[in-house]
Image (tube, rainbow, N blue to C red):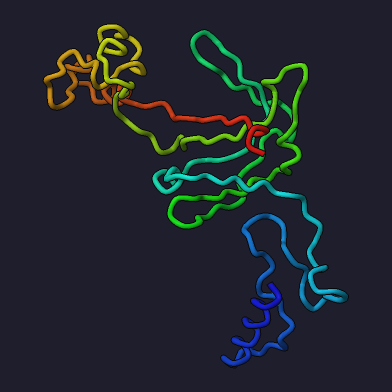
Length: 221
């Protein structure tokens, strides 16, 4: 940071900008709410001892093409408890301050490694509730709600009997491509979807619920 500010000041001076070379053009190395260094004209003492006090951050590394293919994935740390309700698992976040820790910044290393900084101390992520081991910190990867997807499911193996329109006539969330009543049809249409030529109903039936993955954080710290 000292070198970057020094060279910027020299560049400004060379271009005729009225500077005394003591300005601090860059205060942050990473994006985020906190500054990485104090104003350089206030420095005294040993080099490297001029950073404001800031808490530790967690850097999450993701190997793969997830964030390149879905760059707007919302990543955060959530404190809460997952519970099974019927056939589904429902996650309930703790109703306390600090139970949600947002992403601060992200970037890429090479072609297939992404890093994401989350505003939480790694030591906190190791929290264990002996009364309920499911109650802990989770890393949340959430599909944005403002980027809707439309289509049908593609279950593993593609077996029509797993999920089809006839078996789930009132639950379009269970409809799959191999489960179409007319598998020879090349294109979807309102009649095939039971929508009676109603475009709004077609969209409703094809709407895909946003996907969310929760990873137990203490297993990755």
